[in-house]
Image 1 (cartoon, chains in turn red, blue):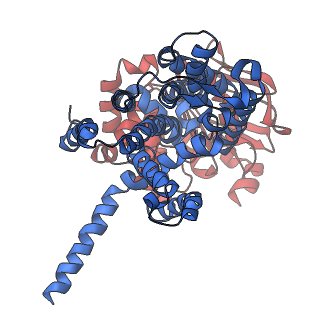
Image 2 (cartoon, rainbow over the protein chains, first blue to last red):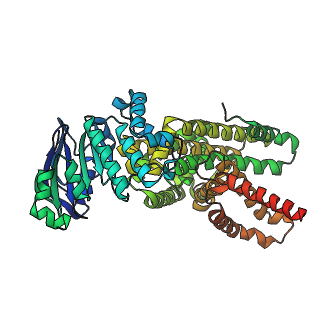
Image 3 (spheres, each protein chain N blue to C red):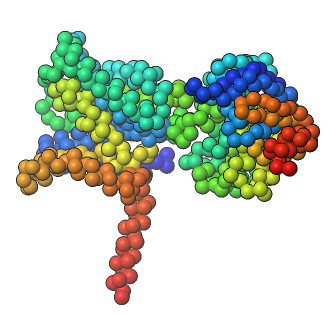
Length: 234
Length: 326
């Protein structure tokens, strides 16, 4: 479904990604793990076109995504839940959600999608009139995910959804991701929370210094000596 | 419409009756200038307050509108009133070109770029004497000797501008503007083209500012580059009007416009001749103090922090009545 082919990317003169290639099949749950500064968020930003790759190609279904302006990405069916939420703090929860469904495909189904999303996130139903900036961290993350769902994506990109959340809320967020996955949405997630994400995903890639160094099924990687040493501290 | 409430009607009634009740041309003049600033301040606020693109260069559009009207007379030899039709559209086109260049930059960098472009426009108008008459400026004969037609025209423009901006902010566009202000990247990932909607906001903003400029030419009868392209008389004043009244609110700039114009006039005339003349030199100092005060105590401006002011007021009265009982 998504193919990233030999992508080199970075910021100005500083190259972050070196020859990164990976793919995500339809209905798969794929995780990219790696330490701070490994380039995880850069990959996400490159897929959603906020950064243009120096070289390489990104394909989604039959469309080439690199060099498409960022505001078009949602139209192809990809929804990016950005790192640190990036809600519109001075708007209500409901307004935030409505802004998630601007793509023509999503607009026609706004009512049903909203009902579905509010069922998935009962917390947000209670708070729909509240300003998004006044929500707690966990609720904000839920709001960001819900906003992402409003565009009826075929694929969702999660950028560090557990950032700044308590272990309990982190589990809640991962449970929601699995729920969304079970409803037929393909998921690509970037996480530092290696142990938990490797348990729930189908496949994972390990990123080190901007290069993909390992690939495998989540459970297999959990047993891998290298991963154990580098991330799990065993 | 819920928005048409009694205070609004009262304000419109007072402003509509003002020239009939107050026979003095002097006070009428001050109100005409204040109404003109309502237009500029509201236009600036749409771009800066609602869309988050702080412009330090609104003199560009004001000056463009004013010179469009002036050049109608000197070059086309038609009435400067044609400028009222042309000034807005010409300023809009200029705005579009400037946005095309400057919207590549974000935040403070955008603001700095608008300062630079503003100064470029002032210098061009100063140096290109064959076209603009340079520092000699453009002098025309005003159509009316009475202030009253100008007063009602200014009132109409102010009402038109506020109504249009009110409708825009309540529309789909308004939500896109605010989304871009809150987080441009997130807005883009929702499918909003930031460039397109920032340009749209700038076009509406520059149109009304240009209209105000064309009105100024018709009303004052004289313009020169140092006045209409001025950084501090126009661009900074537009910002002050917005900040004092309340950025990102409909009624902030109108309130800010009246406060700033009245304050400026009070100082310019040395408190209507009651105080020694050197006081008039202090008006910029007072503007500075006012900005410091507003930012420190009412960061959202008078309208934006209105509930805070009301609370303060009612608390004072509670305290007074409490101490009275004791």
